[in-house]
Image (cartoon, rainbow, N blue to C red; front, side, top):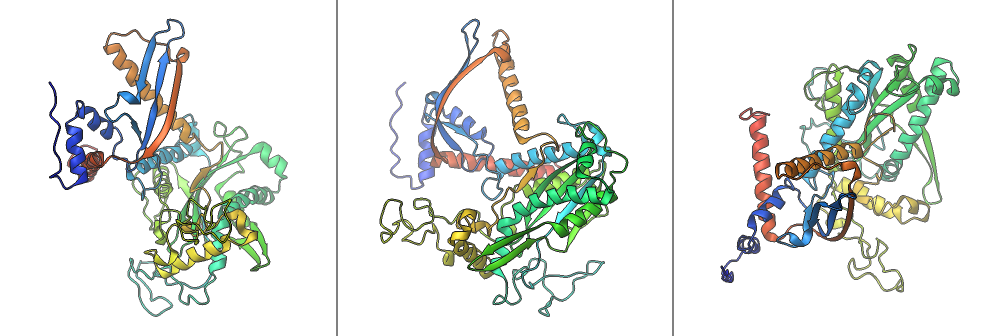
Length: 494
């Protein structure tokens, strides 16, 4: 039957108008299904193309898909952004993967030997040095707050926490440069850790490497003062990795002593005509705690008596999905993309400024950002330092919104445990198994996945939803949040 054209001129809302148009299509159920399959993704990737899987023996097409067959003519797939502030749905998947990655390195599983739970393991926290006194909330051993150096007793959520007591004397240049080199300092720390361990045990590095392997996984977290610090799991293994036990002399005490020496000795020296010589080093406050095998519960920011496998994995996974929200900055680059932050387009005279940023190189004016003055000053410092020739390689203008930090938020040594790619492959294999089961129910013969040949071609179109799809996605996000609340309250099975 012919569908009558809709007159939607009286509908004011663009989203509602588009939703009515979608509902008037021949396959609105498929539109809803495609949005539901994204599980609340905030900004899905729109693709156009096809995938064809054939059996090389029989030449039979086992599976085929064309985006042209979709009601909208495009395929929607998740954005995969790990930042919780940008996409809560995809960040939950990333956090879950990170949790299993860390947990496998502590308790075994995911192709990691379960005997790793008997290896010496430590939860290490490394912090930045001081670049000037800041407002804080000191507490006693019983948790009672002390007055700050300013004389006030700040509340836990006081906006001035972490901001300088005297902004005029605060070393903003040193703070930004420390953030910019924090990743290199961590790499230097891992090198000195092995050297310090050999020295502590009275061995040569060659003998140590032949008998012991040091594995680690770490995550970066922003403090309120705008500086990153690192939480790391460090584990001793035998020479062949997690499948072999470390020698008896490789103890937690030896690990703790080596961390202390490595923190003291790991340094970077920066020379600049503009700011002179700077030494990048760790702060004096670091923490080394043993990790006990197994355990349940959630590790909060407050220190607890002991750290367990599940608690540490949950703690690291939580910070793996955060950006710099804890420091009060923005979660997007301030670099004008058309001109690359230069203020002019390549190939044009310098006097001809970029029309998108009016020659500033900033997609958003720093002075107009809705942030505290302390954060704004760190952003401005990073932006200015990035345009000095000696710091051009740091690309600080690109990472000014991250207050200079440009390293990976989470990383691990190769032998620590499984990889994020391997976990994604497991999910892909599960989906293929589900598709094969559906084929079997439809009466098609089983296929050997190892012999199938797949041909595909995909083109990126855009990101985001149509206005009507956005309304459907909002409902999906509401349903997911509602179900999570019910589970937390124990009203439905977890």
